[in-house]
Amino acid sequence: MHRREFLRQAGVTATVASAAALSACAGQPLRSLAALPNAPRPARLRADAIELAPVRAQVERITGVYVCTRPFRAAGPRIETERLGEKTLVHNYGHGGSGWSLSWGSSTLALRMVQATGVRELGVIGCGALGLTSALLAQRAGLAVRIYAKALPPDVYSMRATGLWTPDSRICDAAHAPALAARWEEMARISFGSYQSLLGLPGQPVEWIDGYGLSEQPFGHPGPPVADEPEYGEFRQVRFTPHAVELPPGSHPFPQPYVRRYTTLMFNITAYARLLMSDFLAGGGRIEVREFQHPSELLALPERTLVNATGYGARALFGDDSVIPVRGQTARLIPQPEVNYGISTEHFSMVPRRDGLLVQAYGDSGNFNNSDITPDRAVSEAAVRQLADLYARMRVG
Image (cartoon, rainbow, N blue to C red; front, side):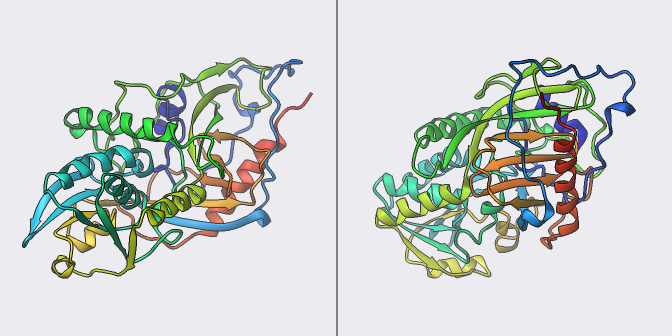
């Protein structure tokens, strides 16, 4: 994520932290307030100021560093049918940083195409966010479903996502946004409604959280675009989460002069993926671990209709060069149940997942069209140290 994207999200839209905005380069050190002579000075904390449990931001508490590639397509997700010999392929991939967020809506559109073929048995290729929701929806519609996948959770790229409600994160480029708007809204509305039925379940697979967008510059003033990335499409025709609220000095402990509180949905992906898998298997679903090297291999499968939910894998399997990898890296810290809020700054963010606090650095370039999945621990350690510096400068009392 770069400065323009951070300020847009923290100050304008409802999705404050982008799941697709992971960075491969460490952010710059946080500037001190002394370096901003024109910024309002922080007031003493009021008696009713927000109290927040501190994050134990220490590099020795990092339990893992994870890299994934988001499947961006300039035209947006590919949800359409294609003939492959005597079989019908229903494509459902290319969601950028919005795979989890739009999964139920996107898979609903795909299911309609499946049902139009009149089959009673369905094969689903892929076991990530889109594969699991496609399989579950088809199963609930009365179809016998089998998933074919080379890897299962937790060893799929979907498991490495940040886990926030980000329905328009790198979903398409600006030129294609008008044509996608109606379909995007339908997918977003269906998905948002589906997530409401998953709230309050054991393990908290989905929950609402508050978060704080912190900035040393006024919100609403985007910075320059990133040289190696396109202008992404934005969809503001419908709001799903409350408006962010700007907090006055003295009402919060943060050292930054500009602070906004936001509210959004968070997916605890470990518990959520396990729930999806359990529901699918309990409903009689079958899973076959299998890797395909060429589309012709799909012709040997017994199902006449298949859903292709391979994400970035569609680039290699189907030769779809329109799928562009967007590299992302996160570090996971030991969970802290008392930390139930998120943080998003111009340089890093923290998401309070139940399976670990996710910390990511924001950078300006080098992630777009980058398929390198080699973790760089030094980058994550730098982000954790920036988080520690923030807490060292927070005010108390």
